[in-house]
Length: 86
Image (cartoon, rainbow, N blue to C red; front, side, top):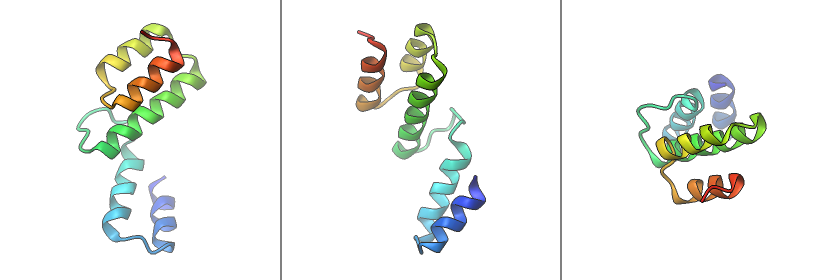
């Protein structure tokens, strides 16, 4: 979680701002509101792609999430490709 992330990045001497952002993202990667940056958006989409694949989400769930959460062209393209959505 956040403490391990912070410790790891500090051991590599990453800048404070970078450490804070990464820790924020780690702590909020399942929070679907107040998405405040492209890094956050990409993380949410990537996390969903993995979870959908591993949990065998229904076509209805995938389509709904694509229409309501996904914003990046790459994420939408990957989701469409993985689930054969036109």
